[in-house]
Image (cartoon, rainbow, N blue to C red):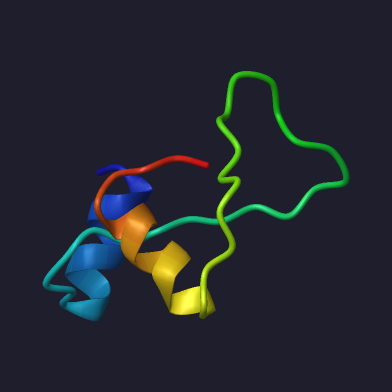
Length: 53
């Protein structure tokens, strides 16, 4: 069973888990969001909608 499926089952999640990674440089091929959001929750929503940034 993939790790995401394990988390969904274990935590009885109703939606897919979202992953973030902190690193010193941006990875190649990942688009940058140029607009500033009013809150961090805005970025969580974009990620939940399937965006990678």
